[in-house]
Image (cartoon, rainbow over all chains, first blue to last red; front, top):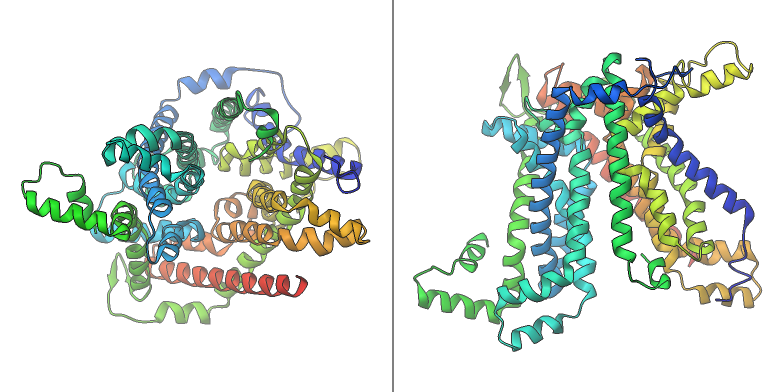
Amino acid sequence: MNFSYINRPNRPLHVYAIVYLAFLYVPVLFLPLFSFNNSIFIAFPLKEFTTKWYVAMFNNEPMIAALANSIKVGVVTSIVATLLGVFAAKAVTRYRMPGKVPVIGFIMLPLVIPGIIFGVSLLILLSQMGVRLSLYTVTMGHIIVCVPFSMAALIPRFEGFDASIEEASADLGENMWWTFWRVTLPMVFPGIIASFLLCFTISFDEFIIAFFLSGTDPTLPIYMWGQLRFPDKLPGVLSLGSIILMISFIVVFVAHWIRTRGMPLQRAGGV
Amino acid sequence: MSDNAASFGNPDSDHISGRRWLSRLFMRHEALRGYSLLSPTLFIVTVGICIPLFILVGMSLWTQHGFDFDKTLTLASYFEISDQPIYAALLKRSILISAGCTLATVILAYPMAYFVAFHVHRHKMIWIILMTLPFWTSYLLRVFSWKIILGYNGVINSGLMGMGIIDQPLEFLLYSPLAVVITLTHAWSAFAILPIYVSLEKIDRSLLEAAADLGDGPVMRFIRITLPLSLPGIIAAALIIFIPTVGDYITPALLGGPDGIMLSNLIQAQFGKVNNWPMGAALAITLMLTVALFSIIFALVTRKVTERIA
């Protein structure tokens, strides 16, 4: 690696990178900071340290219920969206089909439709059909939004392994389903995990569609939205947010550790 | 198509000859197999997107009468949108705020992506994770955290007052279009960094060496090689940010104040407090068409620019 005149260390750029990271992190880190602050007002100056908001959080039944709702919706959404994504990714990578490009574009449509438009149009459809809003309708909306992300996570995996391995399995007498189960699935499994995590995160955090499509059972973001207006409930929301923040940090690092385990350092650098 | 998929996974079918005919058809026609695998996804997307959008268009042609809809088709809502200046003003503001946020996000993220692509040689993945980690937290809380920073008793105001620079809290920080732009810029950073980073990482380093050998300095190398080759990433980043931010109504509702309200807040109100669904539908379609128009113009212009540079 001798790009010395191109990749010469660039001190201002290095400083900028660190300032930029601070810009990304500082606002987020205010949430845990205020979750330990003994005051219902989310403002400076800080009062003394307390963990009472964390204790109160466990007795906050509506919040726990909303958390449970979000987890339910997220799990179902990620399973269904990943399943649809696996089928679709296999179809578009393994078969020559006329009109493949427009079809992929069509499935990717939710990526370029603002959430609010998608939310209100689904709301109108459901209300015209007389469907009552519930967690099922939220799940349906989330599945449609997540399918393109699932495909985006899975297509590189399918492209990344040789189709002749599947053909070899077929030649050795496995039928289509067994080939899929014993050859294709293990090969694309990291992509499936990635798709599952991505879809779960999107669904867990999604507000706009859930806002229009949820009935009397709120998901967690909807519940939080309601709490932002009541200052006395806010610290509880912040402590839950901090816990979610910590869990997602751990999950991301564990996922990274699993990915890079056993890989030579050079490979780990690539995306 | 979904029928094919059903018989596909139905081994108990007693039409043996029919099954054999079908499987022969499948073996012979690759496209058919592909489409039957795709059919569940296509079905869901059709039901979930095309039909709702058609109904949205249909509803925008109705009118609201109390709690019922007058289903005679009319363009009344659209005429009202073009007659009342408030709608055009809100639409313009939505576009300006989103465009401002898109511009700021891309400009701020580019040097960062450039740094990681060209100047980080070991542990690149750690840097990428560090840049994307904050975005795994709740969007709502991320937006809210800016209220802590920009608020009346917020970080900036209490900091400046503590240092004795100002006596009164600055009120323009919160509840202004600027607050919305700052917050959106922070909230969508990851969506700019990643596509730009990927396009920079793909650039063949030997092109830069060649340019250096032929006498181009660092600035010319950047303008003539790095920038044009990373344009696809910039375009992707801009569209990925512009389209959803136009439709965001959380941020303007929390931080915008009366001067920072966007069209999406009005759309949301039509389906809530105001309860005029046809008007909301017409506004949603107006917003969607405007976004599509701007995105297409943007993509075309940048493509033309790329062609001229290259």
